[in-house]
Image 1 (spheres, rainbow, N blue to C red):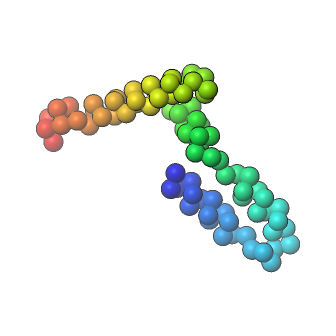
Image 2 (cartoon, rainbow, N blue to C red; image 1 turned 180 degrees about the vertical axis):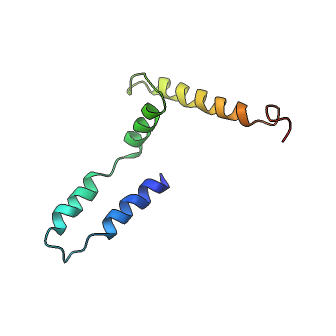
Length: 82
């Protein structure tokens, strides 16, 4: 999310109130902002979630399963204690 916020801030800094089309540019930047829930839905869809976006429990199971896969690959027992 930090990268996303910096990207939006960067877009906002590229425009100036002195620009003749400042209002339109500002509206474009604001309209490109996504709420956390929309960004999370896009993220999990991009990473393989195929369930209904309205299924909160399904999304939680998907995220937990992904974290468990990552954790098991990086746990000390799977890396030989390193």
